[in-house]
Image 1: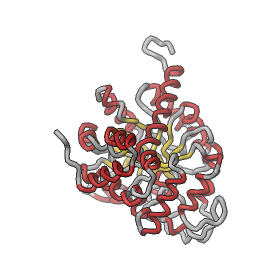
Image 2: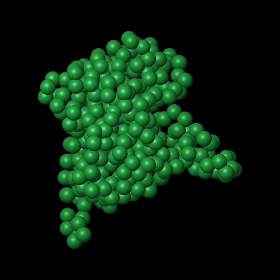
Image 3: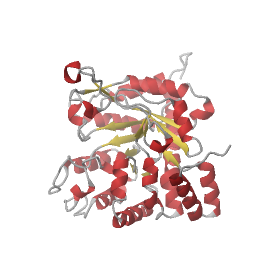
Amino acid sequence: MTKRLSAGHYAAAVLFAALAPASLAAREKAECLFNDSHFHLTNYVQEGISVEDYLKIMDGKVCRSTLFGIPLQQMWDYNNTGDRAPTYYLNTDAPLYYYSFTDAYIAQQYLAMKPAVRARFDPMITGFNPSDMYAADHIRRVLQTYPGVFTGIGEFSIHKEFVSPKVSGITASLTSKALDRLLDFAGEVGLVVLLHNDADVPFSKGDKIPTEWLQMRDLLHRHPNTTIIWAHTGLGRVVKPSQLTGSDGPGGRPDDHLDFLETFLSDPKMRNVYFDISWDEVAKYAVSSPQTIERTAQLLNRYPDRFLFGTDNVAPASAEAHFKVFDMWAPVFAKLTPEASHAVRLGNYERIFDEGRRRVRAWEAANVKTQTGKR
């Protein structure tokens, strides 16, 4: 039976087919609308949807997807909220803490699938504290315990508006030796890294160089052999593009966030760095005006191999909820070349995560003991 697309999805499918040459059009039809570089199966209290339900949402529209939970557990402090159990970090003043069991849960969900279905997913390790020098050891143990499962690490956060101050323990930092150690290990293994780091502090006036940008630049320069995807291009719910207008940035005096991005994209030392354009908060900035739509499309057309589409959805309740972010990007996608559109929605994911799979499986073959004790 042919499945009916929503009006928004149908319009997008027609648009892509019309834009593409015959060979690309045929491939689009076979490959669905996009691969999802940023998907949370579970939420801040480790609840979510089943993989089976997610597959129903994906069917005919999403070819492949990352698969990860959230590394932080929201504490239910009865003294704070009583019988009202928080399900989101803004529901309570109680702290967040790192929840390592999320990696075992994701691995078990993946292993319960049939092999043909597993090929559509790229599970990610998230249950570690990036401030802990043992974080790299946690990642190693997960790979040794679940060989053949994981492709990367993340999404994990360093600076994140409203979240970072709630996390118990030492505050995460871009200058941490622990972060350097785990990124070095990720580079050695070939793990794809999905890193969340705000471009600036919330409510900044944009009157000085954002420390977060400068420290992120230095961090990326220190790890040229690690494949790193910067989640949401550094933006947030209140960390807005307008904050950065007129600031003296890493490469001079940019006019706005798009110019900030170009200082990273044009840096020859950062060819290993990519940007995901996930989250509806990011999409609303990109389509905020005809001028912004045009400039965003121009940037993606200039650097089509450096951006990946993702939803950043957390356990979506319906297909309509899942495809909301994709539909929001339609005005920008309409202005991309066929090649750039394909790369951002599909091709870059395949290239980056396929190479990650290959390298991680090779590392596991050399470093993980079999049941007989041989490597």
